[in-house]
Length: 109
Image (cartoon, rainbow, N blue to C red; front, top):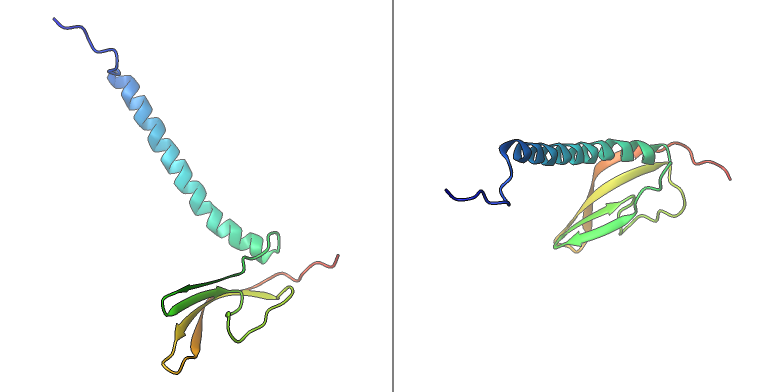
């Protein structure tokens, strides 16, 4: 008879390790899913500053809170929007609103 390999785990211990891995993956996914709506509420309540960005990929531009071309958005805005811009043959850009939300009035300091 050969001696059992010391690197082999007993089936009960292997199930326990697999259960811990599954639990940690489920917990991580649950936290990621919870962060999305919580961040929307935090932005709406002005707990956190809404992100400002403009990203161009090929002929498409995604920008927030204002389109990069045409609007000037300085200072606190009463709303937050995400825009999708498509290049037009004449060189202009046509924007469509993807997301819009009114923000709580800014606090006076």
